[in-house]
Length: 121
Image (cartoon, rainbow, N blue to C red):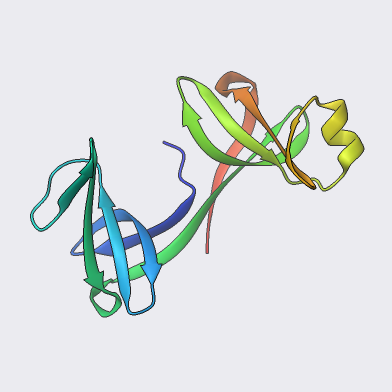
């Protein structure tokens, strides 16, 4: 499972999270007590930040075609990767899509990606 974004530990379990001042929105993939369904396979519960044991940001990094990337998501054996090398000529040589000024992304086969690792802040 590729993780990218905020995560919170609350009542002994870890949830995707979204901090909002004195509150934290917790997200679950299945129904749980106190969570309300916001879409299929997505449940939400808002709790006071003081009740959260730990809040951290997770970034998944990797190497693809010899260059550094961050992994934004995963779907059907493909990873959505964003180039972090900061050199436009390299991004263009790799055939990456220009997502925004200085931001280049692509879909990479999971089998071609190396050194996948999480960084927790």
